Image (tube, rainbow, N blue to C red):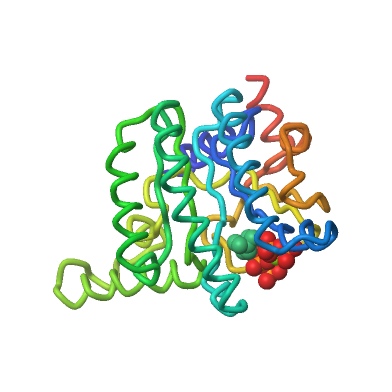
Length: 257
Ligand code: IPE
Ligand code: IPE
Ligand code: MG
């Protein structure tokens, strides 16, 4: 792609008032439950309700992709009982929510190393993805057993396999060569990243894809991250100037051209 095209693309992204892709770390379920004297899983259950709200809000606002971090590759380190309950919740949510998503014309996808979840969950995921594959209102992507480093490493492994078989010349590998093998291949990079729960870190979420994403951190715990909270994040996003390395003047000139 030549320089003019890259600039045009940057300006296009910089001037869109609504993010095309929102990526969320839904954090704070455990603390929310604890503060009410409830078991941690009660917070996770409440969290599922907020997911429902988010999907509805995104469809209404015209956000095309919503990627939610549901379980990280590091979350296996939690007490076995919590991991077990999270898996059960995931399974129940798959059973209960997918029909509704389909009815609302939402496409459902899962990214991450899902093999480790076992047959029952992986087959449900496949069913859900197949059922909703042609839906067009928006795409909901759940990151489960996902890690940003895992994603980059598995894409590199695929590139290496192709280089070994002679399909790809290692000399010609560029940043763009990796993209088709990443979990979010073909999906525009997130415009807005939201993390609830007060921590200001990425926790091994979409490392590659967040390179130019606008970051929004809020102390609000995920079970309380309602529509109003989301709207505040969208307002914050709309008020920013994304520059992608250009100058503010270049963006402004293009905006008024
Ligand atoms: C996020 O909430 C959900 C998952 C990681 C599955 P947490 O469970 O991390 O909640 P806190 O951070 O302990 O409050
Ligand atoms: C990140 O939250 C993962 C998910 C929300 C699924 P964590 O609660 O696991 O992150 P850390 O451990 O505080 O960084
Ligand atoms: Mg947490």
